[in-house]
Image (cartoon, rainbow, N blue to C red; front, top):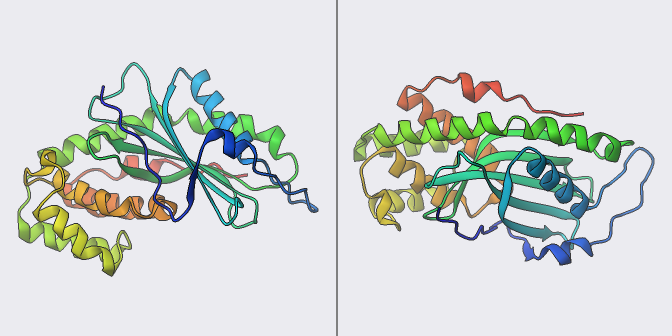
Length: 255
């Protein structure tokens, strides 16, 4: 299996696991009870391993002087594909900007592109008893991982089988812009990646090639990637005739 290094592109500074443990956690204020970044990471990794999954690659980044954390974990099990793998995104904040959260996605090994399934499957506000509740909520979210991995494989196979020409590709780029999957400044880069892919594996004229033109562009903004991935999947799945049932079935776990 080919495993590349995960790369974070979110305007934050990449840090090691040891550096992450040194970040100070603010004291509680009223009902606001922040948790340390490394405690959340440890809980997620423990839950993955308890579910029979192995973390083989990680990336960690801090923003706003350590107040915001975003990380990626690449996991494999006995059924992992040689072409893509499951990615777990983790985020946390000490500035009340967003709750502790976990999202499930997939990564293409050949180019280090990451695309989230769209739904944040764990979202826990920093309130009283967060440390008591976190293991249970995390484990419930990880229990959904197998279903997400299966959906990602089905989507990839559908996109690979769907032939595509320039006219339809250009139309889908505009639809994706309208859906909020990309911004106007990203359009030229998506088209460039479609016309002259950076990786020879995506030179076939298929929806898979177009999809990777998008993900090659989107990997420059990881903090907004779950929403943009969700919008992109909606546009491409509709064009490919895929059922939206799997796309709608993942409900956020929030408490």
